[in-house]
Length: 310
Image 1: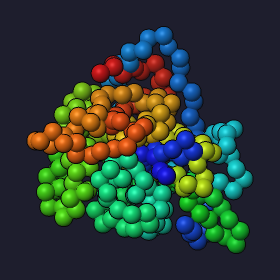
Image 2: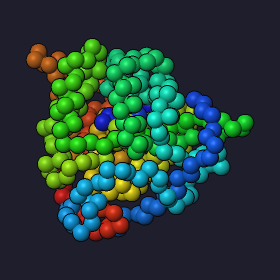
Image 3: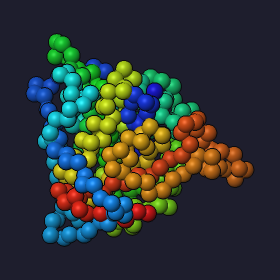
Image 4: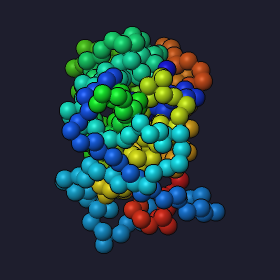
C-alpha cells in the first residue's frame, strides 16, 4: 500500500513513503546530488522566521525556477548502484501517473475511505491534480536503472507552487467536478487550509507544496520516501522558497515529514469531520485517525532562522 500526504503526501506503510513502470532511458541521465546539511540543534523549540530583505529570494521566488539540485550522496539504503534520483518533467507525466495508479490512488487513506477508485484504475480528477503539480517542475522521482537501457519508477514526490488565492479557487472549482468522491476529499483539505491560513501566519506570497509522496510496494522499507522528502527540501531551498507545507493524511507520512523537520500547524481528526446529521464523511481506517497540516521553514544557508510554533 502507499503512504500519504495530500496536498497531499500519501506516505504509506512501514516500508513505504507517502501520498503521491518502465521508461526508456533518456540520452543523458540526470544525477541529483544533495547538499543538505543537518539542522543545528537548539534547546529553544520555538522557531521564528526572520525577514531579511537583503536576499530577494526570501520574499519573491524567481519566475524561472532552478530544476537541478546538487547534493552530497547519503550513506543509506537508497545508495543502490542502480537507484538514481531525477527531476520530473512533463515528459514523464504518463509514466508517473501509471505508477500512482498501482501504488497510491486506491491505497491512500482518504482515497480508500471515499472509495475513489480501484487499484490500477484511472481517476480523471485525481490525475489532473497530479499533472498540474508536474507542470511546476518541482517534483522528484527515484528510478531503478535496469539492463538494456530501461528503468522503473521506484517512488515519486509531487511538489507544486502554491499562491495565496489558489486554495480558494480550487474549492470553487470543486463545484463543477462530477466526481463526488473526489469532492469529499478535497472539500475537507481545502476548507482546512483556508481556516488555518499559512500565508497570513507566516506572511509569505508563495509556498512549496508537497502534494503526493508514493513508493512502489516492491521498494518500500529502503528509505526512498525519506530521501525524496530530503531532496524536496533541497529543491525548495535552491529555488528560494521560505516555507514548505504538506497535508499529511496518514500516520506514516506524518512520521516521515516530522523526521525531516516539519512541524504540526493544525490537525483535523477524521471522526470529527461530519455532515449535518453527525455522520462521519470520511471513515478512515486506523491507524490513520487525523490529517495534519505540516510546515517547514526554509532559510537558505542560515540555520539560525526560526519559525514560531502555532
